[in-house]
Image 1 (tube, rainbow, N blue to C red):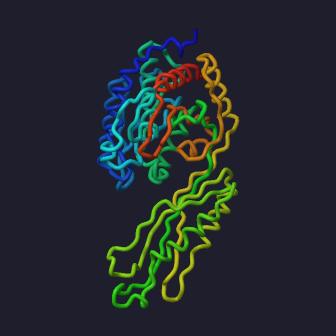
Image 2 (image 1 turned 180 degrees about the vertical axis):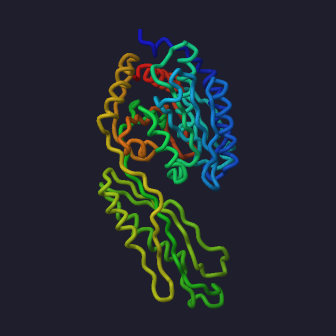
Length: 378
């Protein structure tokens, strides 16, 4: 019997611990909420025996947490568990999406993306320590605060910490079929700004030019550029303040995703071509925001996957791999050429919706997989 199969996990205890995490809501833009979540995770790490360092976060956002477990070579790089604790769900989502178990599913905001996988990863480390398994390499943890907005403030921290390690494990949600991720598509975010001309909407409507109307006209043009190689979507629109005023500005945010960097680069060019304003200042602006580079599986990542697959075979579970959309901080480490295995987290669905849930059985299954992998890595 394999080591991973012999480790002890108490599902009820895992669910109770995960419930504390899920009920500590932590939307990215609420720095106080994110910091409460970081404190909770840091306390759990300390209770597990880790040394913890709090890292001040980017301006206006929450903090990050670095942790190291005792090891004769603790100061050296080894295995980095890399995860984010921010979510897309605003505080109060628990009222409509409470933590609850229904049969083989467990629901809650952020439970799949990615508190469930992160908690399972820490349970894997705890199980190894409880069984007195000495891993060949030291285990470190990095928990970040802004992944859901593209990691604009933590990319430097992520790349600096990852460069010190031999293996990067990312417990983002599993792919369909119990799969893991060995590559990620390239992603670009854009800031959109439409400019209009003000007037009184009741007394002089024809004197104005609506920025909202300008934005609305551009959205179908942007989204119609989507093809098999590159997608375009507008996900945020905000404009106007008074209904009796013709709007002078309307802002939005767009996202583009491509399987190849060259396709994304062409997509960026097409988006920036929308920049156009007339002599009166009326028109449209596009500014390139955060970009996640394409991550294509290299030899180091495929070798790491092969080791994970061997553990999965011992556990008699499938473990297919593929490149995936969605983006994660694995984009950065994978693009650096570091051995990165993503999608190690729990199985589930409904991510970023009010139906977000995990498959309960996957908590123990994925914890075993990650524990076995960490024990096997050299």
